[in-house]
Amino acid sequence: MITETHNEPWAHRLGRGAGRVWRWAARRDQQLTRTLMAHGVPARFASTMLWLVKLVVLGVLFYAAFWLALLVVFAIVAAWAARNTDWDHDHDDKAEWRSGWDGFGLYRGEVRIDGGSADDE
Image 1 (cartoon, rainbow, N blue to C red):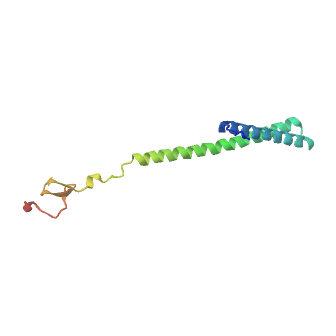
Image 2 (cartoon, one colour):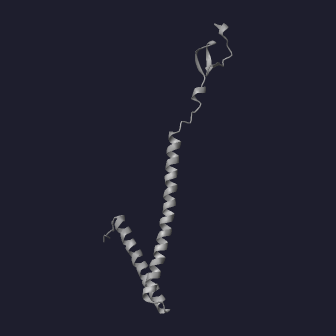
Image 3 (cartoon, rainbow, N blue to C red):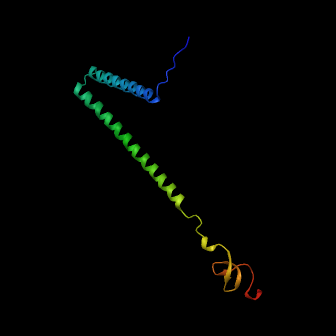
């Protein structure tokens, strides 16, 4: 006997799960409205109050998402700046062998640092 496997794409499973969550939230919303009406709150006021709560929650989520996005943008800009920064800022101070005022020798900038003098030639 062969059992069938369910190779359903993950998007379908995710969509089905989102639908279940949506239906659960709608049922809880209706249940809360009925509970408020049972306690003497007018139906219109209960519905309006629930919508205001939903809008406040949505506003808080947008506020948090804004700051999170700003933090991500800041991190990206900082990483880009760090990547494009010339960390070898003392490249003029590297010692190099060349001819200068004191003859051929090891110079850093315009100063000979190898201990020799022009008379060494």
